[in-house]
Image 1 (cartoon, helix red, strand yellow):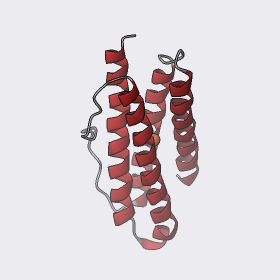
Image 2 (cartoon, rainbow, N blue to C red):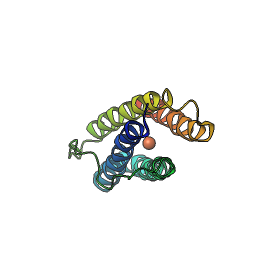
Image 3 (cartoon, protein in one colour):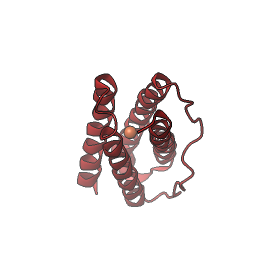
Image 4 (cartoon, helix red, strand yellow):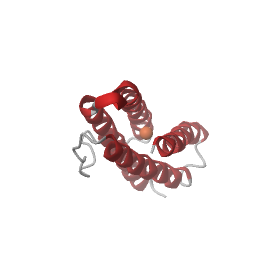
Amino acid sequence: MSNTKLVAKLNGGLAWELRASALYSHYSAYVKGIHRIHLKAFFDEEASESNTHADMVRAAIVKLGGQAVTDRDPTEIVHTTDYKVMLEEALKTEQKAAKGYEAVLALIKDDEEMYDSIEQIYFQELRSVEEVTQLL
Ligand SMILES: [Fe+2]
């Protein structure tokens, strides 16, 4: 695979992280009622994790000599005050992220450093999928 195609895939991941960060920050602001006690902290943590992932993916793009995107993926962030809907949207977001990184991993086997970095993100996405599934 050419660097151009790999950069495009990584940029897809970066845009998805930027969207995830916006989604979690949005839900952190709007979650209400008794669930706010736990879920605000959870959403804040996930927003912060998404920003960390974005940094790592951006670093990989820079390493490849590519140009990193600055806009989030345009997929709608569903506005709601229903925590169940928030968690369902979070689950979809994490599942798609995990799938994307799984696909990237298959393409970067030759670069050990990059592989380790993306694999770390991938495992964290899987953990988030597990965590959100338990919350639902
Ligand atoms: Fe992520």
